[in-house]
Image (cartoon, rainbow, N blue to C red; front, side):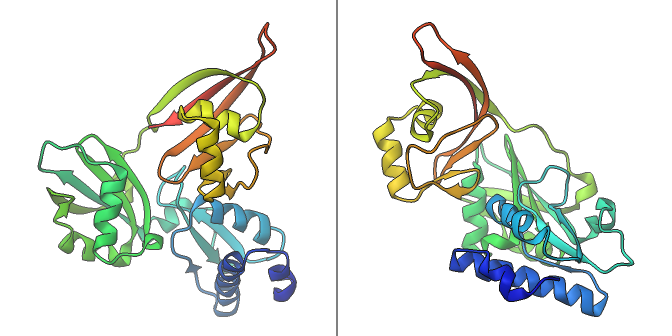
Length: 264
């Protein structure tokens, strides 16, 4: 492992330094004890930090995995040399999922489920992906706290729910629901693209940027003139996210055609 202080100096924000320091501690422990260590769940921005900062700076084998392939929220697993760190199935035993079924007619949202869990005193980093499908949800958690939630989660909002803990091998996933938006924009500035994708004015987008609520590829945006490219993900805290699927070229009037997918 490279010098710890040099690694931390490459990180700007204090909260990011703290996060990277925790990851380095876990990597060091795996090396020294010859045992598997792992983090709490991390979000896509922290996942980017791990890939950016740790990938070329530590020798400890590590894997980012969230209980199923393609998970958005993952844990970082550090492995000693004698364990294959690329074997997903080997680590499935770390996870469970809580199947929550609504007993009422009201359709519950991701925010409803997350609010109910955090209302029990569970911190966000203890919760993985929340997969909502009509009147039920599958919530990925670490094995050691799964049964606590089963015993305590009886309501989501005002709706009674039934709960059972299951192995992640039984998890069924589906493609996220999206809405396709075809639009033309004056430029590929983030405020233009976000305005088209979220259906709100550019001035409102500027307000979100000032309030530090708008992220591009999980990093906070400070300027509305930031340029966008294909594949970029724009998210606004509290409003969801959009993906720039493709840039389709210029129209006869000189505007730029874009195809955007909004997650719903």
